[in-house]
Image 1: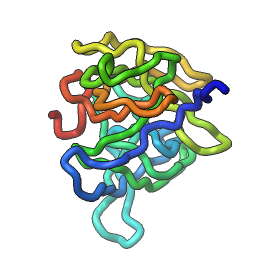
Image 2: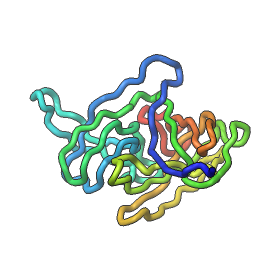
Image 3: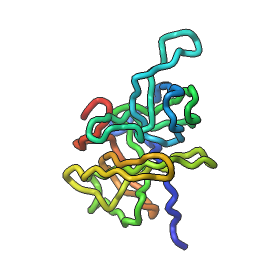
Length: 193
């Protein structure tokens, strides 16, 4: 039986140096017209929302679909769903050394020998409205030592595009890879390593 190619976004599975995974709360304002799905890669946004306990404002985030190729720094992956054009709060795995697992959006047969340590472009999608899970992934066929070319494509009615992460290892038969933010691509983790 063939394996199912069902993108699920990027899920945090550990930290590069070990230790617990941590998450911080971020917010999405009504001005952001795209929903945030579980596993979506997020970027910081200039807007913030008031905290529910009247404390400090909660910093803003937006889907990486709203990013600018080559300049937008990605923040981490969302743990929860937030409807489009609605004020929502999100827990985000944003530790710079977090390792994520994601799935290739193509049928590339990935191996550690051919893909580990290489950069791959991210592909974005509009998310699954039934499961509320992300449809972001990466393109395994474009794995390269040098940063791959950035291309933009449409996914449904929402704009999509490709960003980069570095493959740290390959597992299973589902074209999945362990990814670490940036590591040399022009779009890297929030601390710019």
